[in-house]
Length: 166
Image: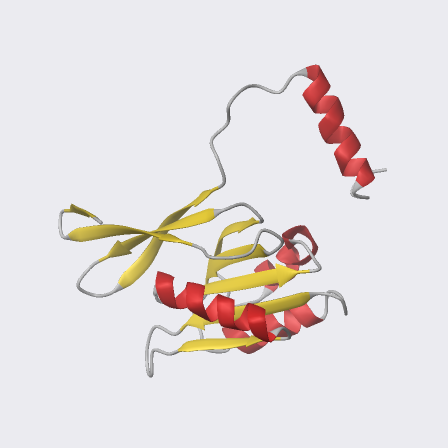
């Protein structure tokens, strides 16, 4: 932890298997859990997911839902570790964030999406006397170079191989 002017900063590493994608965001209402669940179920019958939401008032519970018990447990563990008010964690298998991100962002309670990735993620959490809040995320690794023409050709081919471009 690092302290600055009454604020402590803590880094929380998101725990997940390599084949699982994560979406982390902030919402504002207990209805978030049910609305996110409905949005995700409507995307694909094959999508497996778990989600958890840190309630920021009232009972202040980690609310959860999903259609894959292991992913639900993992989402709860990650949301609990982050512990920031109104933060949500969605874990996906057999689907990608690109397939659900618009539906997630369209949920009326969703204020912000911090990341949507399969990469390793660290969450920077600010801690004050009032509680905890997400200050930002570290998603994956830093760049090691500039894309060449060959790299660009590989990127374009990958998008076509995955079916995202014609």
